[in-house]
Amino acid sequence: MRPAQSLRPASYVCPLCDGMLHATSAHALLAPEGDVSKRRHAHMDCVVAARRRGELPTEDEFRKSEKRRRGR
Image (cartoon, rainbow, N blue to C red; front, side):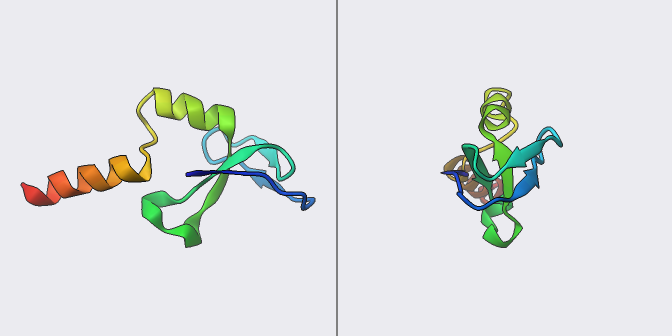
């Protein structure tokens, strides 16, 4: 996940709320399991809410959980 903003006149659909997101607004890029080819644009408010609910791990949190799972 990283902050993003573009001056390009594009629109995206937030994968967390299915709402429209304009590229010119501040938003985040999400890369599922670190695969940047599958990245998605999401509203910052949606990302913050998902993080608070524990539904959206950071890359570091994901890697730690993978190490624990493989170690067992």
